[in-house]
Length: 112
Length: 113
Image (cartoon, rainbow over all chains, first blue to last red; front, side, top):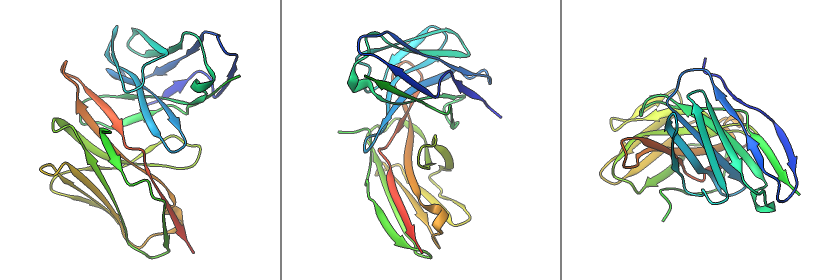
């Protein structure tokens, strides 16, 4: 079965810190996604990537950047963390256009 | 306007009830459609894909109406274990040949004994 691994389950950072969230998948999927989930707002797409070095903004990219140097790894970067970026971050990967998403376990980030 | 819209609920139903969830999407170039289920503090998991011809999996029936850009999920004979958030999900064409996956905000279901 596909495995999507996020580097941390819980993370606490201070305002202004640079934060890296890592995600690795083991099924050679082309498409990878970063979402954040907040109560009442569902999953909102931050960025996605459809190939190595290719990235597209999602619905809420402000304050974030991403990196995909290798096919299996998709990193989310908070350049200068702010308290409104406290959230659950979910990484996912997908094969073809008609295929389902496979999720990591999520990273609960708290910015103090 | 959100790209995928759902009634947030919550829906409170007794065991054995039939409950229906609806979802609309804005992008007519959408390619594929799904219902996911999410339990509290867990990641979403695929419940079923949705096809124009309609599809059924046990007590669950999903339907797609492309002309109306509308998706539905019907749960018959509700069980306590069906209590969860149900997410409508759409793979949408985004212009450079790829498809992004967009979630609705979810509909919360509580099934009571």
